[in-house]
Image (cartoon, rainbow, N blue to C red; front, top):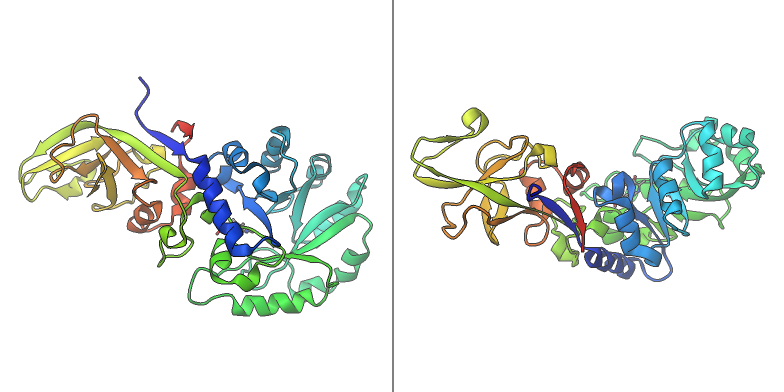
Length: 359
Ligand SMILES: *Cc1c(COP(=O)(O)O)cnc(C)c1O
């Protein structure tokens, strides 16, 4: 028998969340379904199949992931969010109709030198304050005319990414810079700015192409708001079972380092899930977990293949009882918050060894 751990991917929840995004952005906006990092750990092809023709396009990072989508029959536009990395990537972009984001003069030169059979559409990354990639007012000046006149470039979409759409600082400053940069280009150029947080909080950013990621997977981009507040449904549910039950007496310790010591008689369940499955090792005592549908907490340090939880208040739980690590019934956001991280990281960390079941 295989280990009882599995990740269930709920395709109808993914479609539901997509429909929520559509409600937020309206019928006119175009939606890139962001499926980078293997669809935030949900499985690239699984996510693409679930969304099918609903998505106006798919956005990801690796050229190989883009090729895989094309080979699976995806016809919509595909955006490479981090662009291309060397000149030899360009024939693949052309052949598989992958639209790269570009952020440097070197990339523009490579496109010109590649002499592709037809002009390559690009997303022009504009740095409005994130300060990772993209052109600023200063760095765009020497290439602006060249960009506009280049026969090697197809349609140009102006793109920027918000650093603070999810927090109190907000997007005002970046929006202003984007407006100023945009004024340097023809009005007809399409734009793309909104990530999940901006879609939910700043309707004015949903012009053109929006780029939702985390909301599609049913988690909240905000620290202070639940996914349920936005009627988002969990897509990934990570489940396992209790392998063993320990009856502890006062003073007994559990697991590596004795991070938990029983202060009173306690029942502790051993769960077939550890950090090698993607569960965060830094989740402290008290991280929420569901056993037999009831909420309890982890106790002791998470080890590679197992973790332990308190069953003292759940007498009906025993060996074989079902456990939910996150997902349906236990928002990943809550587990993430307890572990000092975000649901994005939990999803992306799901290990290859965990069997994925689509439903
Ligand atoms: C990952 C990413 C997104 C999606 O972000 P979410 O917060 O998951 O919505 C959008 N745009 C870019 C450029 C990204 O890299």
